[in-house]
Image (cartoon, rainbow, N blue to C red; front, side, top):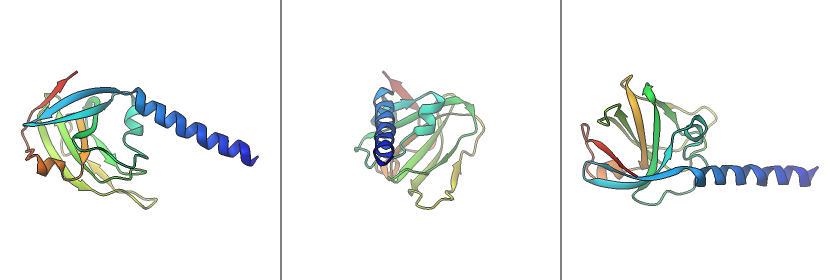
Length: 144
């Protein structure tokens, strides 16, 4: 029974790791800053996000692509602090939630968008938006 549980745990980790490797990658520019990103497009990719990652290299991130609407994020099982950047359907930055801490409790706070027309959400290392002088109104440009 112990061996079965151990193997199940290893299998789940491998599935999580392989799902992260399978995501499309691209380069995005916001203002004058450029980042290499993984693209989370499917519901399962968006649900997984950056959960269980222990680090995110500088100038890298994750771009979530969703149907236009409200976006609500939380930091459950996310171990690194992040900046959340919300973009509308035209790719215009409408909101920055800076320095969002990891959640270490069972009841994690949520970080909803202020607008109901959010299409893209960019997660970056905490402080990256300020470091790169990213501002509301900046345009998101995606380069394959």
